[in-house]
Structure formats: structure tokens, C-alpha cells
Length: 337
Image (cartoon, rainbow, N blue to C red; front, side):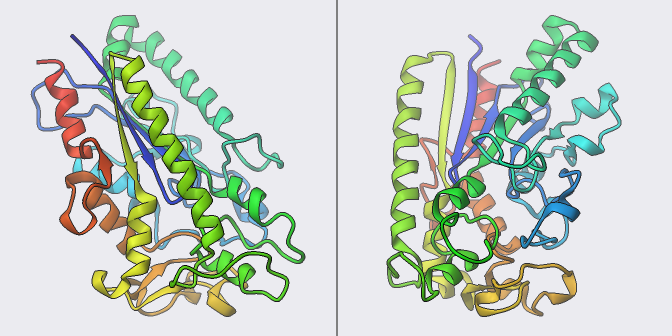
């Protein structure tokens, strides 16, 4: 019997979701394509039409390089999938759709956006449904059904929602989205004279915020457990990237990092007063930093998370439950054999 396979990754932000749906051929590539939804954890601003204009005091360069150094792209590479093209960069051909699409946009939110420049989860979902309709028109109902079931859907949202929750009442500028209470942008605000939060948990982080994010992820995992029971045709996996990043920040030298507080690309205290508005601002030793800019991790952190989510690396073990992403992909294959 075919089973729907869902990988839900609760990231440093509110949540990431990967959806793998099985595979019907015997090639080494176990997933047909990857479809991504999310915020700056899946998009470097490439897929945000007016990001260079409306990024405000956020980083103009939220990634060190390109989308290819982000977590979902690193996982796609491990699966042998081609580069997933941003939604607004695709040419509209059926071949392009079959290679996967990135619907994510920097500054995207789960809730409805307060600005027309942002794409909410609902807006991205509408784009996904439009893609599914096009696939059905081009491939036929049965072929498109099996193709979608053998694809992976990856969701990662929450940073801007936390901004609205924690920073909207601060006076002065708002310095970008936050992942959780250890990002440079939030440390800058929380250490200011007008800060209302409690510092710290031994790492300089805002423990008040970390506790709320942890509670969210705990409730999310509990819901996933219930969904696995309620949906017999679904296989849902939860990956807690929050815990992974927290461990890296708590023991940075163990993972080869020298600075777990300051942004590599930025100006001011913690490198968070002004975001990364030019790649020339970046530090010379990117690999020594946990944070690239105001709220995004460096490629080295993303690589550690990808390796751990994929194979359950011992140092960051038990990141994904009940199985790893690699096991999830293999499970999707066995369900068709």
C-alpha cells in the first residue's frame, strides 16, 4: 500500500516542513523533485521581487553566496536532486516544474503579512496548488499523482512572526527577523538599556524567548505524533533544528567555532546594528562564526545541520524523530516495492 511520507522539521524558527512522498523507480535518486516553501532559511532574497528595495534595515545579503548553501539545498544535494529554481525565476515550462520549485521568499510569514512586499504561507501554498494543477494538465491525473507522491515538500517559516511578537514594542529600528533568543539582532535589542527581557542562559542568549520557541516546538511535535496516529497513510518525521543550533551555541569550540554571538557580516555591537548591505563587509573567517548576519547561520552551521538531519550524526544525534531524513527517503522507496 502506498503511504504519504511527511518530514516536518522544527527549525530554529517556528518550523520547517519537508514532505517526501515515496518513489516508484529503482534508480539511486529516491525523490523525484523538491518543492520548498519558507522564509530566508530557503531564500537569499532571490525570490523576493522587491527585496533589494523593501529589505529596510535587514541584510541585503542574508546568505553568504547563494541559495545553494541553505539547508534544504544541502539536503537536496544529498538526494542527487538538481538545483531547485526560485518561483519567480522559472521559465514556466513543464520541464522546469518537474525539476522542483522554490516558492520561499525572504521575510515570509506564517500569518498574513503586514506589507505587500512579503509572501505569507497562504500565498506560497496558492502557488503550490497552481503548480499541481499545471502538472495534472500536462501529465494527466494518474501520472501527476504518482509524481507528486514521489516528491519532497520542504517548509520553513517563523522568523518574521517572532519579530512581530518580540520586537514590535521596542523603540528605534527593528533589526530584522529572529530565529530565536541567540541571534545577533535579538542580542543587540535585549542588551539595550530599554530591554525588557532576561539575559541569559549562560550563553548571552535571551532565555525568555528560547523558552517560548522550545514550547512551540514541543507542542508541534506532540501534534505530529497525533497526526501519525490519525493518518494511517502518512509517515511524518519531526526534526528539531532548534536543539541542534542551541547545542552549537552552547559548545561552539566543540564544533570548531570561535564566535557564537556576533554576525560575520554586519556593523555595530554584535555586528547587528546594520545588516549585511555589502558582501565586502563580511569577516575574513566566515567558518569561525555561527552567525552570518543578523539572524541567519553561516554555511558551516547549515552543513552541520544537514549532515545531522540526513544521517543522524552522533554529535548532533536524535535531531530527527523517529527516523533520519535518509531513512525517510528510503522508507518512501520501500512503500512502492
